[in-house]
Image 1 (cartoon, rainbow, N blue to C red):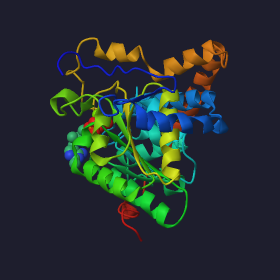
Image 2: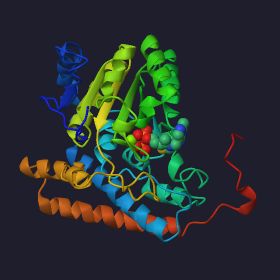
Image 3: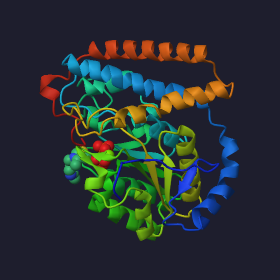
Length: 359
Ligand SMILES: Cc1ncc(C[n+]2csc(CCOP(=O)(O)OP(=O)(O)O)c2C)c(N)n1
Ligand SMILES: [Mg+2]
């Protein structure tokens, strides 16, 4: 396990890779994948919409950076630029009746779930019109009406909450599932292991989605974790562990779709590892000097937006000119949303602790 850090994976025709060291003959999950993938067409995913959604997240975070530098966003921010395909691909595979938990790096998932960018900006700027009335900020984008039941700054804290939502859905006899997003670093936290164990024993309808971006704060994964492919950890809990190219939105969608169908069919959880990379440092104060020379550039050449854009051109789904128009439309929308949010009122001083606890 020495040498370059790499997230190279080999893709089969479904875009999914099983962890060969776990499933030597590829039998278990490959088999399931093949049989479940056939129903995929029913959903006819709108890949133009995926492109728009990824562009929206990218532009939103460019604007977040600007607003932060202007002193309009208090605290800090954790950007997900480079990781957009995980949010968009996975969330496209669930319905409005499903649940999700996210982390402090959660702008992408919140927007992919349909949160209004203006409400998100207002939340980051601490305004009364924000998603959580400005009391939560960047790390806590939560909206029960979208099934977004929590954004957690405590590493690993979202997994047991998603498991609880999944078990509640199961016990109530609904077909809802829960997705929980977390980072590679979270797989070294106790709650990760407790949640996978319990979910397996109870066959909970939950999908554990790890965004393996190779770093936990300032530490490369090699210095904290004894192997590269985190999907191997699923074997300890007798659930499928699947590794996908997290910069390939089609692959993320397909893998999540399969895992969600498995969960809805009562067959229990899946652990999905999405190999990806964050372009920025851990948070606003991190210049990311610990990266290897050329690493960022190598990942940018596999940019998820660029890749989908090129695929849509190659497949005659969308021209470059149409994509330019879409980018401009998204940019205008983001500029207008940020402007309106910046003009929104602050919470009243005497109400500053309102909404923090249940009333
Ligand atoms: C329980 C806990 N321990 C430590 C921290 C400090 N901390 C914040 S983010 C982070 C790194 C997490 O890395 P990863 O799970 O890979 O997520 P990423 O930031 O890469 O998305 C750490 C250690 C924390 N918030 N919670
Ligand atoms: Mg990480």
